[in-house]
Length: 419
Image 1 (tube, rainbow, N blue to C red):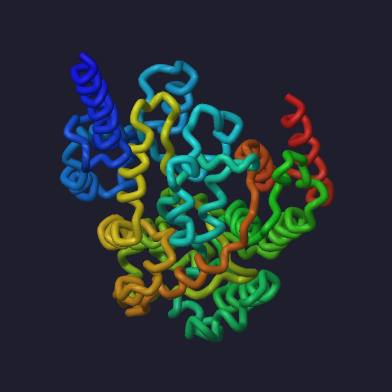
Image 2: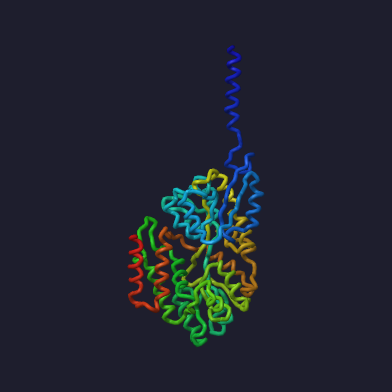
């Protein structure tokens, strides 16, 4: 009887211990049970062919990809509010900071192993996906480093330097750039402009600053931040001097301006290369790129997150980590023109490829240097609403008193913040 009892106890122990050796679902490739993960993204935010490869990479995951059209942000916010129908993985644009107050609705990616790959990514980009409380909700996707786009032939005709390095030396500050704009204006009798629109001047200067409208503690500093006022004053000065074409981005006027030689230059993010080439086919070979006046900035770029409703967060994170690893980010640079956030990608031959539209220049080298030098800065969840007010006031500057417009805009911002 004792021997039989001991045998039963031994069998129970063996069964319990053997349970510890079952495959962990933390490794999607090791489990025999197939799970389903749903991924939301918008057109060209992730390479479609790469998503197909992801399905092969994780055979034990049924990866359902949904390309969301229309207002992606509104759909996501509405779905989160309804607490129903949320995906397991979701792409986010640079409005990720608007969801910081809802950090409890997303998994902290640090808890899923994100810290193990942190050193592979640009520091400033990584920190943009981390809340002030240290909760990482956004994993780095692409970036939008900025540079100065300019027409080499128009600069030459105006008597300005044309070599990218010489242009940067002459126009290293925004004040230098403004002076060069006056030279260009005079050379063409005021018919060719140094910039596209006043809002873009302001946006680009703000993007170069390490301080914006808020502190990480949530305090508003827009009215005391010297960089904000300097950006405003410089944008107003460009407008007053007649250096702006008044062509809004993504408009027929902008397309015609860059194609017909009305717009000779502008500061823009790397993703503006494609819209420029599509809008100005007649100018192929005439554009060049150099470092932006005033310093390096970033506009745009995306992130990936995992809503708390997901039942398989570890598996979802493994998919994200694979999709956005250095090799795959380099693939998306080649196929979809998504500029990497992984540091090692900047040493690739792809970055050094010459581009016929830009006269054979390897513009990737310029944008890579810009990306490496973007300053760490905090935006805050109310950045979009505040920045939108400032932009609207600037766009109406010609109908306002320029001496009081800034203070009036700040008063409007303060009313908005009290809501």
